[in-house]
Length: 195
Image (cartoon, rainbow, N blue to C red; front, side, top):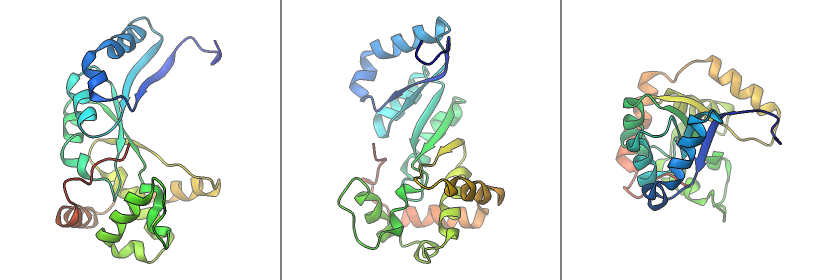
């Protein structure tokens, strides 16, 4: 009633643990909402083992998950499973909070991204230009299966900038592959998605 609609396009479960997913009651509730026409699609938003469980359950239509220059682990683990099942993939944090723009290590939830960018040491991020934002966003949207990216900003002009970046099209294959190879050479197994 408050939304003034008779249905939602997407009803998404956010950050639910694998244990709760395995119990099944939350999934059943969401399925009933879909079957009764209250929502067209149901989705899961989360990371790592819980995301993989959600994908393999085949109950969800969409998956929202971290995918960025600093969050690539899911490209090899979760995303192929989601693509195989025809799920819509929503990339969250496609810029990894642009942590490369900060000169000193932050003391909040952005710190792990800052650490990762320091170790990955991508040359184009060192220049601090709009090209760095373009490369980061285009990389995320070049990942096979990614349907859309959620880009947060506090500056209205950024929306127009991001749109201009996307006019350039997908990242060139050689640049995309170089980013993936750098990740594989540097990233330890515990660089998993940030919830």
